[in-house]
Length: 267
Ligand code: ADP
Ligand code: MG
View 1: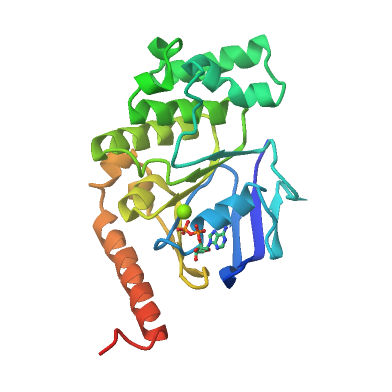
View 2: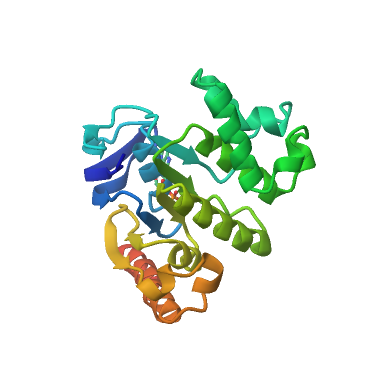
């Protein structure tokens, strides 16, 4: 079945005692079946807010999200959400952690267990089933978290900076593994990251968010020469560096605009 996500004029305001923060304003985009889109932007520009809205965790103040043509009104079985922190339960074995999503959905069957085992094997975790999270490295724990997310067979994956707490080498290895796994299983994905290289290396399209309020500043398509390579090799593909430079300049312009809005850098 094809999967699609459509955001229409998504706007969000946080209200608390200190006042109101316009976190997102008028976000529009459509995610096609099998597409991998990255959302990049400086810290605080609304990336996590946007992903939480797409996950159905809360409703936008204005606008709407449609998943496979239907209005999203809460968490959906079509959508898997993976965070920077792995949130594995320390008292559960890796196997029991991997099954958690299925358990919560009362979807444990011989077939779903078989599929989870298959994913764990694919992720190189076959030897860890009876171990506990504290006995695993950060990269292994993120792989378990990914298996847990994939085990319930979502069509669409939302990834919020899933590699940012990892050391550089582990991050590069995991980027390749995740890209390969998602492609093989035909998933549609949104990756939120502040790492420009990662966004270019992993995605088909990049949405750059502006800050205060978070708006779409620019959208760039990743050229085929880069998309055809694994994330690791993509970094050496033709066109990678010019694209990096383009997005980098956009980030600098966002900073500059922010300073100007505040009335200059001061005396
Ligand atoms: P990012 O993930 O890009 O760093 P966030 O989506 O976390 O950005 O935050 C966007 C803006 O909304 C920031 O200004 C942040 O301070 C504000 N914000 C985020 N969560 C809350 C909240 N629960 N209450 C009030 N303001 C919030
Ligand atoms: Mg965030």
